[in-house]
Length: 518
Image (cartoon, rainbow, N blue to C red; front, side, top):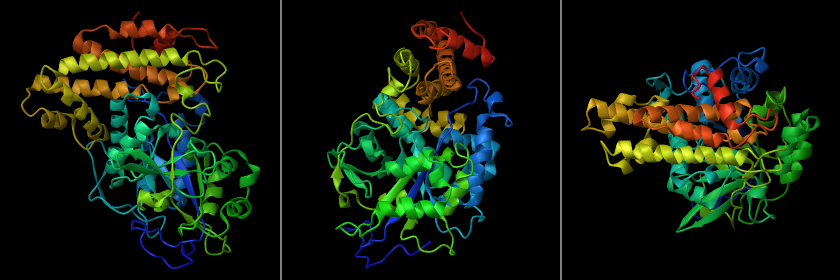
């Protein structure tokens, strides 16, 4: 990799001035994520014949994308976020690849085959760090369940963000400075929570800026009021689209660098001394799964080797550009509220009739049904918690429960810590309520609404999460919330099969080997 400076550095990025670094830069970000595919009742993924010759889609995508990119060392030269639901699957099914993801966050490793930092095992086999690494790495966190945060309650947003940050901290051994918002769906309220939680930067699409004239070749700061501000990096839409959809453009990484990248960033830096930067942001699965051999293209693009002539720019990471500089050093802009990267209709795709779906009339009723269930669950849970704790303490407990899910703390130890004076029955009840909330949060994963028909496996998965949560709370409290849930689900139908949501719910339960209660 070439030297990153061509002039005199006037000061560190965190100081009052940006260093006089004018050589242009390229950063590639991979959003690595898979939805939760495990049966909430059994913890197993059912065989998926469409993924043949592999058992299921996780196994196939791992073989085509995660494993080869990790083995080639690509992750050491890009920015990336690793979704917790995917990371958890990797720990169990491909631990070596998971370890390479973790090791890739530590800059300065001797080689691609270097051993990861020494770690100790958690109670469920997850790798736990011996010590935190305060250095800026190239990995970013991700909100935990991939829920569309602008559509969530403030309490749920905080939990999803806190779980994502904590999972990252336990997994990578440092507190993250950046976070990937699911579908990059954003509003100012969500950004304020990020700042409150210590996040410095995030990545958005250029059309998510309020000003359509935004220059994506530099980061910006978004002022959020009350002294709060965050750095936003807007990715290069043209370059990202070329990598994603133009197979001819990515046949040769050297040509792509010369003909596509360099023209976008060639020239002197900005007046304040900061360099021009091009950010390519795509799904990580693009590199080898969505596009065969694209992992080889990525390797050549971000780590060309000493034999390649100087391309006129350096490869960097988003964190190196945005995660270490004080936000005040960047020009100010504002975001367009309730927008996302995968839909030009704001966040409509996940709650109403979006033009991206031929018939999206089912999306609104599904969201309302699950929101009504969530509200009812929370009300009942607060009532049950009031028997052994201050009901308001239930929500801070929920925010910390990710340690149990990760395996950093046992459920029994967690209950003893949160209820030091409780008896065994109360602690078991508390643990059950935490599991209710776990699955209640999981039922809002964005995948349930992304596609055009609720008969798909992704929607059935969120319905199974709802079933797990509602059956737990009905057993605990003697309520009949599942009956009301089925009534609410009956208000929409599948565009292709013309069966209603209650029938889809029953079908999902039957496929998962769970009793269907009429």
